[in-house]
Image (cartoon, rainbow, N blue to C red; front, side):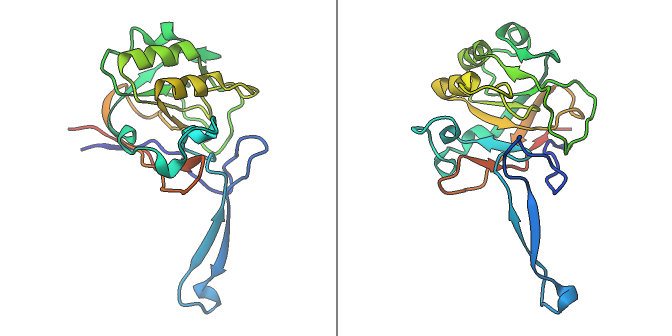
Length: 209
């Protein structure tokens, strides 16, 4: 069964959202210095790299990460190629996403691999009308290869809040350039971070032979 890793590498070269806490790694114990084992410590924003947003990220009344159900992050998912432009609209999805689709992963940058550590400031966002369409079709999770479903400078976060209204969870910063369009089994479990607004994920897709 082929497995596609759709997570971006997470390291000191990974650029965070502008102004957010970057990834850092330090060593508390090193065998080379006489310790019995190697022990590291990391600091990072949970939004660096491939991650799941908890509803609390965009609403004080929303669920924190450890309270979010796991079911949306496990199960059949459809990878869809959408136009590389400013915003994905309902018109871009209506002919690509059939009714009953539970999870949709949007490839907005075609099949060209980029620097997976770089922050893409020209990313494609998601229009709230596209979120409403996905909800009508039965979607419970939307993922994107962009760092956000809303524009870089947005303060109102309309796409995030549309997801909140419609009960759709969000995955961001996926890597889909090497994945053919079609249906897969998604496994993208967030960590059980108590009280957090997001979590890193190791997202993979599996497709039967």
